[in-house]
Every structure is written in C-alpha cells, then in structure tokens.
Image 1: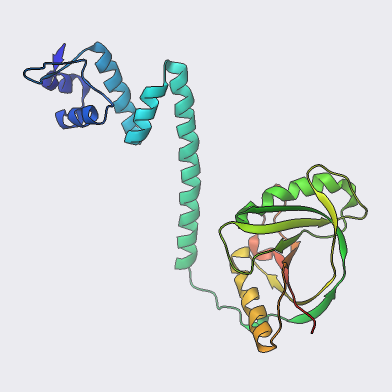
Image 2 (image 1 turned 45 degrees about the vertical axis):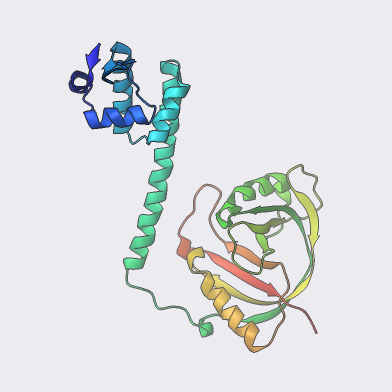
Length: 266
C-alpha cells in the first residue's frame, strides 16, 4: 500500500489531482484510515491511474473518463471506446477546417456584391412535371444524401435536373423540404414517391456561383416581389442546373441554380 505522496510519485499524478479524482469517484483509494482519513493506494489503483493518465493525455473529459472506467471490463472494450474517440476527433477536425475556411473566405478581399441588375428577373409559367420525390425535415446540408436515392429509384428514366421544394417561409434549423427528380414515366419505389409537381406561375432568376452566395439571388427576387406586391405561395423551388456530382463537388463557382418563387394570380 502507498500513501498519497508516494502514490503521486509513482503514478505521475499530483496530489491535488488525486484528491480531485477521489471527489469525482474516478480514482478512489482502496483504503482510507477512519481515524486519520489518510488515503492508501494499491497496485490495482496504480493500473487505473495509468489508464486515467492516458485518457487525460488524449483529451478525454472527466465525464468521458468516468463512463470509460465504468463500462470497460477488458482491453477489447477499451479498444472500442478509443476507436469511437478517434472518430469523434476526426469529425471535430473536419468541423474546425470548415471554420478555418469560413474565416479565410472572410479575410479575402471581398468581392463586389451582385446587385439586382446583375440578375435577370423573369415571370414564367412553370409546367407540371412528373417527379420521384422524397420529403423530409432536416438541415439544409442534408439534402445531398437523398439525391443518390432518387437516381437509384428513377434509373434510366431521368427527365431533368434535381428540384428542391422548400415548405418554410423563413430560414429554420429543421426545414421541411422535398427533393425531386423528374422522371419520364411513373416508377415504383420504396424510397421515393412518384407524383406530379403542379404547374405554377413564378418569379424567377438564375444564380451563377456557390450556394454560399445564393442569398443574393433571393435578395433580388424579394426586392422585385415587394415592389410589385406579389403574394408568394409555398413551396418555393430551386432547380440545380449545374451542381456538385455524386462523387465530386467540383468548383462551386461553376454551379448554376435557378430560383423560382411561385405567387398567387389575382
């Protein structure tokens, strides 16, 4: 048995840390003298201390350490948890890289913002179209995961570009959307509904560039709508004339998106 100062030397953990781990029920001494309240540690405690030191070195939180110690029974269990941690770190790295790109984009010389006159605004009669559709509620960046399902369902009957319908007037975290793929004939699928997307009259424009600047097209359209007192109806639509592929995203500056805002005919 080792007193806390000796155990500190052996384990490489400070006395302050050992007392904290005791309070957190992470590393309690095997024996505590009832009279003196001195802590005494044994070889089992030393092995646990080594594991705690490892987990702290790879950025495990106190709660993660506690859960790990409570759940593992052998090295195999620990391996599974460490593999999960690797996946978490990799996901975190991707998130941090995205943040860096956002910051770098802001630091770059700002491009001249497109003005309304840069967008050609048209009023169009949009005919009805037969589509395979998947309706879902989720984040806007989840749209892409449904597109391969539609192509698989439609197969050789593709009859146009991907259309996405938005059923919310405003920007929301969990959006109601319906991604559609025009099809030459009715198809039967467990993953997609075959339906007729109705004809509408819409105010339209075409955006050239990344989706990050698509708001400029909406800005121009809303200015037109407000000036002409048009009453919009849902869903609004985006037609992806040219966008990322299934495997490769390509150059976002080459994307072409047509935005359609249907309105009531009075």
